[in-house]
Image (cartoon, rainbow, N blue to C red; front, side, top):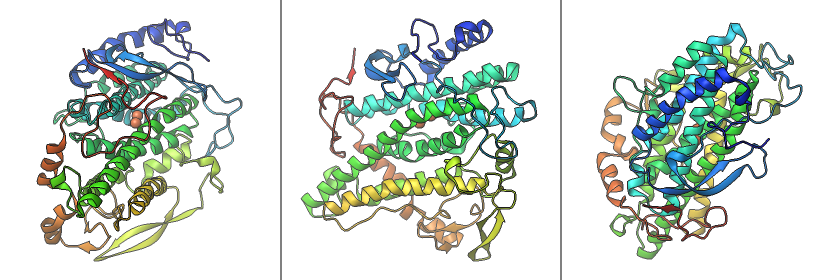
Length: 471
Ligand SMILES: [Fe+2]
Ligand SMILES: [Fe+2]
């Protein structure tokens, strides 16, 4: 279905036929634009950016590319088309037809899931708003802005569900999405990892590698939902999310490549004097981002997660590809347990360990990209590897929150943690060093010295294309 861009809110959900909903969303739109102006990318309103915009929801050719002033970007509402006779794939309503309206008995839970997901979308835009001032290239600046406008669209996606299906409390929740802000001491964003500022580009690429991958897994679990509008919304969001992870993975890869080049050229691991980011520093950023992202999956044991699953609201990653009964009444799973000074595991109901299952799938997916980084390092004849830290490392939520462990997973006392944590996590000096490299490069085709150029440009354009026009 093609999307009509003559409408004030481009959509494929038939807004024109629902005057009440259209009016409600038209009332929210100015507040959204005001928020973008106040807390979106700084000093970007005059730039013309080579952006892609959704013009249909077909797998082929959904995107249009062209230069757009970001405040004029057409944020719209796009759901993948309904699947005929779709049935709920899991939980106590398994094999029943999916719901097109919110089931009254699950209203509170569904709203909470949608609000929690929706809150992360504008949060990431707020976290990244200062990065434009220090872009390593026009290509990267454009990718940052592309990610930002799509996170804005993801907020639209969740706000649409709230307005269309939750009446007055939905409208109130939609307003609050624009009232909480990343890092605001009085009204912070809901999840902790979305309150940190993303102040340098190494952090941005790690964010799009790790945090956006958390997004992928949350959206994939919600795409299984028995509440069909949520499922269809998340399916389209996942196509955009894939691009965010592409930005993250290729960004980290290009930094690793440049570091390895400098290591070979100068025959040293310490490439800082040559304007590179040493592998040890990259490892610290991985340790930080991965550990705070594991917290996003919540407690390993969770009755909320069990309820969401049994109610048919939030499934597992690729639910229908898992070979079991999809009800999990009698299924078990091993869950780690802290036993004094060592770790054991115990059998737990699989239903209450749904968060752990999703987190383990996330860990596998995260490892795949790290393997590609290591392959690139090995191909440059450098004897070093990057690793994901142990799940016990630097945790604030769940079973490991009260213990300290090294990235290798050795339990240590509080004194050792305090004395050594900056061997593993970015120190104030590390941040200062990385920030010292962040000087803007805005000449078409030029790259900052700490990152290799990308393999190719965007949508067939050359690397030295004017991806962003400044006025
Ligand atoms: Fe998103
Ligand atoms: Fe994203």
